[in-house]
Length: 511
Length: 99
Image 1 (cartoon, one colour):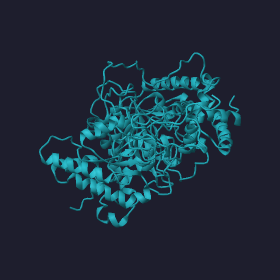
Image 2 (image 1 turned 135 degrees about the horizontal axis):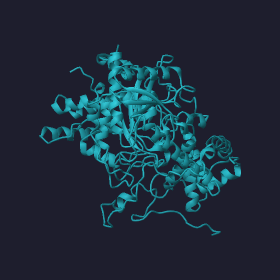
Image 3 (image 1 turned 90 degrees about the vertical axis):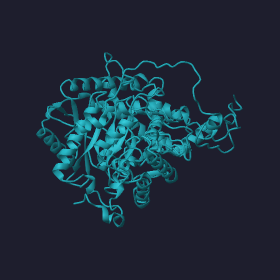
Image 4 (image 1 turned 60 degrees about the vertical axis):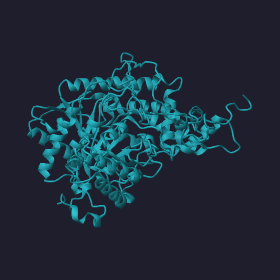
């Protein structure tokens, strides 16, 4: 058998596992081998769970051989963003303050993955506590973009996106507070979806900003994200913000993808100035393809989007500063005893000084300021009002459009180190993704091609009203099919070979 | 309004329980100033007639019956603690000498 199992989609791999053509141990080993071959350069993983993954895979194979009824995805490997707590696997959220911590419980999404028989192969790198757009704020060093190792893989979920783009895992879990699933997808040529707020349980996700955070799927194809979303979605009594809705099958939405008559609203404020020409070129080309397939393209205005970043960088740090108070050197993680001893508060302050990185400190201080007496109404209160304005804008836009569309981010992947000295310029990079978090609506980023000027991936973002995640899967799958038909290959088949010796026999998709 | 001083940052660091170094206080003071200059624009559009939104999807409090559920054992809860005595977390003195 010459097929490289790491090149298969999760869906294709699942078919081979179900038919018995491939065992889960073989599939898992292939991905572990791939990680061993390329992750020294990519650094997508903070922890590779070789032994437990192979044991889980062997158990799936045994149960399948015994005739047990299995979930269709049983035996498929998956990578987990390190923001999600995992029993038996270290969980750091990219921070030194949690170095070596092995949680005593599983997040609900992990419980669901294990019940479906998915094999967790490791934990992926991220900006510390998901604070960043480049993974450069990880306490364990940055992840590198598989398309160009000198460039950022996006953030905060750069590890999950890079793992998927580098064929180290067919899909992964991510989390999205201001774009941390969608922007990494944009810069790595992958797919990522932020579900409706409350659509996926956050029990066991280490909170950054509780009114914004959402867990979601990361993959190479729209169908794989939908299949994963079908596993992790749904109500969880352990998360009080979890919606009680019954959700449709997102995989069905992909299989029934059709844009004929679909009203697609182009967001006027998210194009033009500050958007790279190659990003806009791929964007307009994608819209033309959708129009050719019967979609109705209109323009919509979201005037309050102009203030979305400002509101976000008040609300997010404010919530983060209180969420991160739990790292107090008492119940888990690091403890640093100051010279000469001291009270528990002195120990706490010394621990947090040493355990938090620069960006975490910056946001905690910013959030503490925004919430402090005398400033609360002016800053946090005003930011919450802007949130209302953004929601009203979306409501008005969705009266005239079924989905909205924009480039996922203004530029392709920038170079590692390019923006670390200027926090504000890093923040402004999230302009297109933040509004969805403020409004709680779902958003997806799907590859639109490569920018002409630098040959790097470009994503396109679709947004839908709350609870209409299925629409996103439909329109993204339709565009994916139209683009791949036009190109004659997948976008990721164009990514550079990271280890040519290993991949000689397997580049069937390469041109 | 967003004029931020080193004294303020020192006070915020104390509130946030982070023993920042003098160098960090200097750099954070200037960074916070430039970030606040940008984000303070929210005050221009947040007029009194606009209600605040704290939560993106309207929700009500969620209650459950007050019954004992499956919880972590003491051993599991203590497993990741920096210090414990077998049944409780152990910390240093709560009060300083002047308290």
